[in-house]
Amino acid sequence: MNRPQFKKVEYPLKTLLDDIAMGEIGLPEIQRPFVWPNKKVRDLFDSMYRGYPIGSLLFWVNGRQDSHRQIGTDSKQDVPRLMVVDGQQRLTSLYAVLKGIEVIRKNFRKERIKIAFRPRDKKFEVANTAICRDPEWLPDISKLWSEETTHTKVIKRVIKNLREKRDIREDEEDQLSEKIDGLYTLQNYPLIVLELYSSVEEKDAADIFVRINKQGTPLNQADFILTLMSVFWDEGRAELEAFCRAAHKPSTGKASPFNPFIQPDPDQLLRVSVALGFRRARLEHVCSILRGKDLQTGQFSDEEREKQFAVLKESQDYILDLQHWHEFFKALVLAGFRRSDFISSKNALLYTYALYLIGKRDFGVEAFSLRNVIARWFLMVSLTRRYTDSPESRMEQDLADLRDVSTASGFVARLDQTISTTLTDDYWNITLPNELATSSARNPALYTYYAALNLLDAQVLFSKMKVAELMDPISHAKKAALERHHLFPKKYLERLGIKETRDINQIANQALVEWSDNIEISDMAPSEYVPKYTQRFDNNELRKMYFWHALPHNWEKMDYRGFLEERRKLMAQVIRRAFEKLLKNG
Image (cartoon, rainbow, N blue to C red; front, side, top):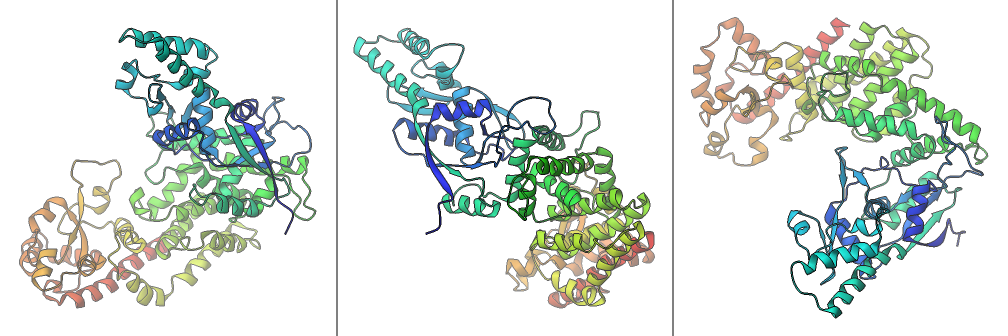
């Protein structure tokens, strides 16, 4: 048997919470937003009160030899000796309730968790208005450990409130006091902590986490780096959190990261910082680097850690620059993507942002050229799902391809070379039509087709309105302006004996129409409604419309399956035409 990678320590709950308050144990709220529902917090206290085990915690020794200040601050506060790897939700629950502090939810809103206790039957519940009005309940158990009072005074207040409602016998009063005393002594509840030695590798720590807690929230390398930020560079963690919080809500007039494409989480933007600063997509080695670890000797160095955090700080400052952030989104608009529901892969957006910043900062690519090549790149990666399977490996290769590039023109040429070797004639004529042979509602090829309609300034089918006008992300109504219309309606196909949902909902059987037209067409046969709607347009307008919407000549009279096959080919050519327009622009 190999030497154990940990030691087992038993702590009273109060000791753990005091160590968190003093900074000995790092419990960063940004490491993973508090996701437990309040009912789960209630159940945690119920289990502890009953004397049940609540599982062990997993900490990781940070590798420091002596006391060190946090990077980027003038305070003399020591960095935490222990980082929480597993058990953050439990510890956050306990800390928040016993200390009476707010937690940060996934939407970045703060909330106080109020757990109520009814001593009569030792019942725990999430506090609500009715409970707060009922004297049978202690509506907020946090009061027991408050520094503003004592638990004895809390008990007396509960009994006083109850006496105002009903008579209480002396023995009942003693029982109530005893039960609330039992709740107060939960601060002495013993918790088992497994402390991983500082020598444990990051990948091994993650593997240990998975083996210990298969039901927990999956831990990844981004979690480790966010933990390290909280330990060694808390200001940077706070900046990242503030940016993401602001990106989740519309601006009230001042400059804001809010946008119609993505409301990022800290771990997502962290990947952009790492790609820009370290030219890495795999985060495993970055975790070691940021701990100040020499990958050759395995030794930790404060000097090396501060040096690497300085690289991360410079990169983060650059990616959080609002000018860079919003200029990047102009490239997406140029490529025809106008809102978040066109973005089928957040990885595609984030990695493209990283390449945009590398081109801008490291190669000094002129703004016009950079925007155009990034527009071409984003259309390509979105269409081909480049960063869907093994995204880190793919991005590592894309970053590696830039190692021998030294000029702005070389950067643009290298991206264009990758694009051209990906979007070949065989791709346009064979692969892409096959990709469109699906009924999946979230298909990257379909979203790229819609982007192509924007890029080509196309009109909505049977309408004088532009696709771009009706897809404006700031336009909202009770009924969507655009709807996906079944060219061969469902009821009509069922009358023909085609009843499988997969066959009916084929991408090639759907087109964008105004919602009023969609309602009016209903289940009419194409041969019935097409003559009526084409009367709105002259021959030149119809020719353009049939091209934009990939409709074969006399399609309304075609066999359904033959129509689908032909339209897929035409949809692929529409996307190709849009891409060629981007090439001419650039």
